[in-house]
Length: 193
Image (cartoon, rainbow, N blue to C red; front, side, top):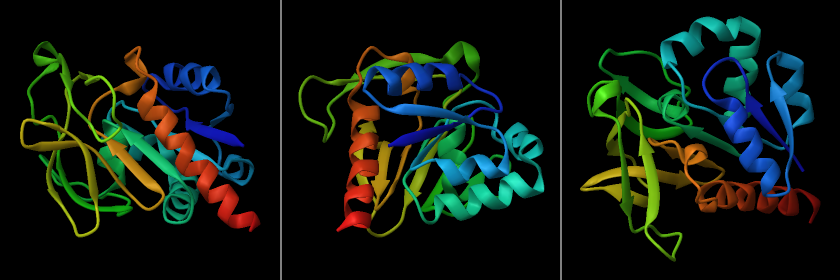
């Protein structure tokens, strides 16, 4: 099982380290042909408008195709990229999850925070690191809310796609990445049965 991490900007290396700690083989994805060699993809945080500029036409098209067919996990800017609708300002999303996401909804960099909240992952409250975080304003039918910040969904999933508005790669808690690896393993198992 090889997990790709989109490595154009953001702390992609923290995702790589966490996934390798959990036993995954990781490939940094920078070119269109890299998508041919991965079973799942993490889209890290960063700046979503910068992602759109850096991707280029070929990589953007491969990314769009991938997120609609294989397991994908987006964090912060990655969650924005996966959304159907993006506000503040409006920008195109990949429409992998039927949700509306508001960019920078909780304030500026200085308003960043670490919270602990219960989640559907069980065990201790989940540590969530919010840095210029987006807010999920609306989730469509069939999207499971795995964790919340107050009333706001902050970790969601549907089918093969997960999104977090926080940075699980900056926490000591590996449960979010482990949950994504389960999605990838389940997809691989279904493909071979």
